[in-house]
Each structure stands twice: as structure tokens, then as C-alpha cells.
Length: 182
Image (cartoon, rainbow, N blue to C red; front, side):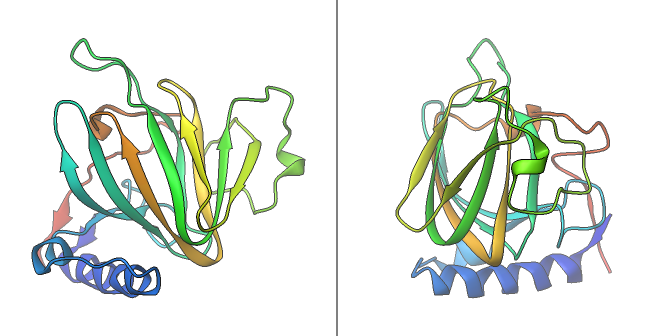
């Protein structure tokens, strides 16, 4: 469980990355940066920092920060409340993003360019995104992603986000873990 002081520290660090990418945030957005540690207690390795601009019944827009080699672990967006799983487009704004999907079933873990994360992963079709490049992930596609050595800032444009219902390959992961006051 993360302490509130750790969340504030991670929010401050994320703000530095947003500034590097030229992303302007309101004071309210800065205060509400979500720190997703996924319940493992190793947020600098497994997790991400998120600003959600909008999330309606039809659309969602977010900015995400990944620290150097930080991983958002393997998951897929499943149907929720009678709606198809989330379709999302990632656009790299700053840094380098390593994105892994199940598009090529013959891709092997030996061929990827970053260390394997400390979580269960099963897909290894690698796409590298540099600033200005983007990739669309269809609903129910297994995927995971990580930043390169400098970290990364990613814009996400998607259908409605129901991340709380994401299915993770690693059963230890919790999308919305609790934060403890210190």
C-alpha cells in the first residue's frame, strides 16, 4: 500500500516529465495525477502516472508518464456493462515507448529490447514509438508497455475507459490499490 507522501512524490516527478514534453496542466489536473502502483509496492518499476482529461460514455483522453524503464504490465480491456472493451491509441509525446502486443504470435521474449518486467507477460510483438508516432490497440488485445532509459510521456485517445475492469495476466495486480495516510 502506498503512503500519501509517496503519491505526492511521484506526482511531483511526473510533473517534471509533463513539462519536458511541453504538456500544460491546470492546477486541478496537477493535484489529481493518478499514481497507479498496481498493488505490488514497486511503483518505480511497475506502474504509471496518469492525468485523465475526459472520460465520458463515448470517449476518453489521458496523458501518461512512465519513469525510466517503468512498466505498465500486461493486460487487456474486456467488455464491461454490455460495451466492447476499450479501443485506444497511444501517441508518444516525449522519450521512447516499447509497446508489446499479441499481434505476431511468433514473437519471442528473446527478441525484445528491454529487460523483462517483474510481472507475468506472454506477448512480445514489439513496436517502438518515438515522439510523434502512434499505435492503435483494439479491444481485448493483450498488451504491455514500458519506457526507455529516459522515461516517456504518452497521450492516450480511446473509447470509454473502464480500467478498473482490466484483466491482468499477472493475478497479483490490482488496478486501483488503496493509499494510506501518513
